[in-house]
Image 1: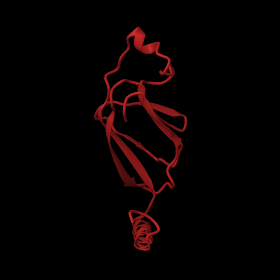
Image 2: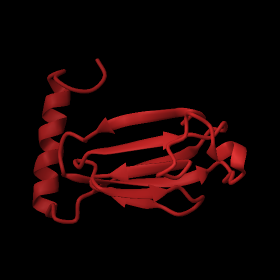
Image 3: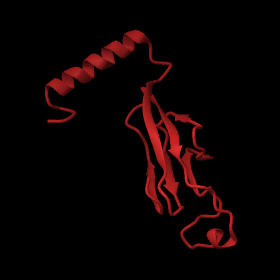
Image 4: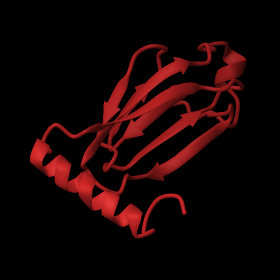
Amino acid sequence: LHGKSSIKPHSGPMNLRLRMHMPLMVPKKDDTPSAKNTKDVIPSRPTTGMRVADQTREWHEGSAIVLDDSYVHEVWNDSEESRVLLLLDLWHPDVKMEEREKIANMFSFARGKGWIGAK
């Protein structure tokens, strides 16, 4: 995520997965008074972070955040530098193996019909 940018509140299409965000590069924290007084920074939130429902987290390199992205969430980077992360989708632990197989077959069928995915 480039500096001075954000991804507005949104939600994933279903709760079949959990999404892991693994921060690889996080801008250094700038606690100088000039950094805190810029008009683009919201003082009640970290410089780089994520909000899921009513919980806010700050990014830390190498410290993963796992979430159910069917909840409304947003991310931001109020710094000047880019923030880089690895994004990984995992099956939700409440989805049983038999259900996973049926869901995978359903998506394969839809992809084969050209209803989803690259054409």
